[in-house]
Length: 327
Image 1 (cartoon, one colour):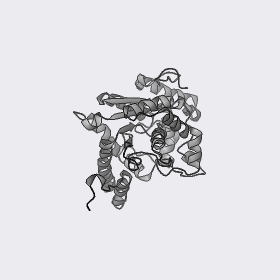
Image 2 (tube, rainbow, N blue to C red):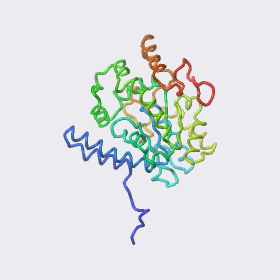
Image 3 (tube, rainbow, N blue to C red):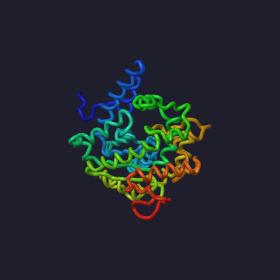
Image 4 (cartoon, rainbow, N blue to C red):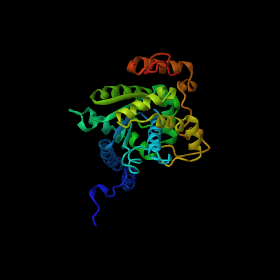
């Protein structure tokens, strides 16, 4: 008996990505970079077209944390264990009622194809009709965490792809923190440009939503409720509370230390190096702990002068866009 087409087995997005990386590994560097950028771009765009929600965020904006909360709300609803974190189709393959996600930076290498599709004239109608969340965070806080991610956690293939398109490739084994933060192509200047550009791209989207890390830290439930609404998922109060509590800083830190998670960037790397943990500090304004006062002032001045003020990061106190302050 022939299996109907809607029940045929299809490889997961994760398996497809893995097959691309393995099949291109033997190529010379330039050919490998070119092939991976092309093939992974095609996969990324396909993921976007199939997704029920697209989350755009620069690395270290809190995207993994947000995905844990969204995943947990659906896991609670459908009685699925919490050790799998959705990045694309992981939960959808377990229950077809759970939408696929796409979490992308929409900026570096093959992920840039998402920005390109929205900047085309006209924008890709399939993408512009989807709910797209722009996840923001104070660029100065990102800069510090991004330095640690780039030098200690980032996979070799991503590092190679990013460096291949830089005018001045960055040696992650030798670059110093301040040098990285001031780098025009990766550091604070680029982060500001990243957010300004994505704020403009949201104007082409039918269901845009700006969510900020600082507001999630203050209370994630209002934003999770808004995300559920634009996804047409309608999270209940019970699901939202479960998602918030499961993804609390202390619980995630404990679970990561125990090696609980099987995917989603939360897998344990090096138990003896706190900087390699995905869940490190999450402190709002924590960048000030790493630099001299004159360096902090330079960073804050750059944000004030260059970043779109609507993000709420231009003053001394970060304003909660939903009302009140977030720290």
